[in-house]
Image 1 (cartoon, rainbow, N blue to C red):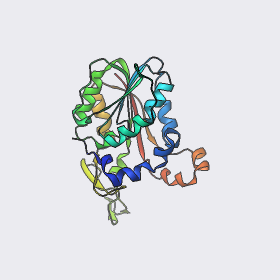
Image 2: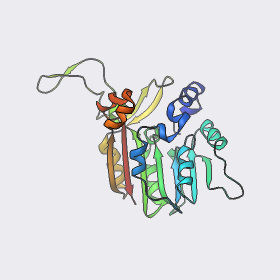
Image 3: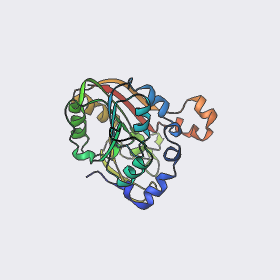
Length: 246
């Protein structure tokens, strides 16, 4: 089962206070770029993998989607999403459901867009999930995802080392060694699955996706002028954004 860290009270309390949790998509610095990678959603069917508080689900509804399925493993997330999503019965556009992305089974040919923001780096069996998503999309359907960039899931190791030329460098921690990494972020022992950029892209290609765009996201000069604290993110990209088509 996907690690359900969001139902940890300490983690959820801290996560709920983050700007993107309080103010939504417009407080996520990568959102303008991610939004530009999305297709026209008018009349489309959408699944949000790891929907969290439902911010994207509500945005998709406002963008004209005819049906939005928000999936998350966390009861805390789903409760908040339902509380903040007014949707009149008997035919709501947005439906939230609890699902473990490690074992996800979706009906074939059911969605025009599969979207996932900062959730897939928690999934161990990503190959199976990508296969399920490919099957669930209609021909020509879109996949748009963001994950924590691998240079963050393989954080700095302590101490300087010498490279092959004898230069001292401050290296990433075993970047090419993929697998679970434990980090203390909002709570102790948060597990993320480290993969290289190549692995993410090749998993999509192996399952039959055609890559449309790949972005190693960092803030623009205009964003830094507005939010100077984001300047540090120019040193290395915090997010990997990918769009692909079935």
